[in-house]
Length: 120
View (cartoon, rainbow, N blue to C red):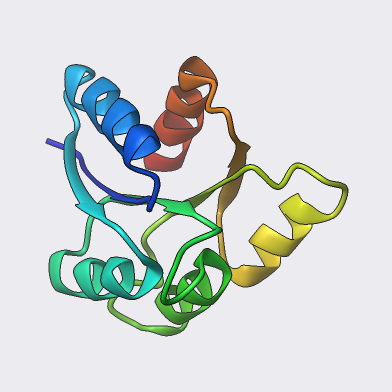
């Protein structure tokens, strides 16, 4: 079973995404802020991380950088999830260490396609 770590502080987004991912057969662990997300990724080494970029404690930009600089977690694909859809935001997410980028509100079918391509 594929393990996904969902790092999202918004309860409604977290619940909706986790339920839909579980229905598709994924195992989903959840973190509520960037620091907790980094710690969980280091402890559990999920197959993929869905990372909100606007998080409390440690934002997604910093969390992605920490994860990609740590030998234990640098190979885990990260998909940035953000409401920031301005010019340059995708590049900023990729520069922070994310492997792909998706905008909110989430188009679940599009996100599944990205997850599928990341996992091969």
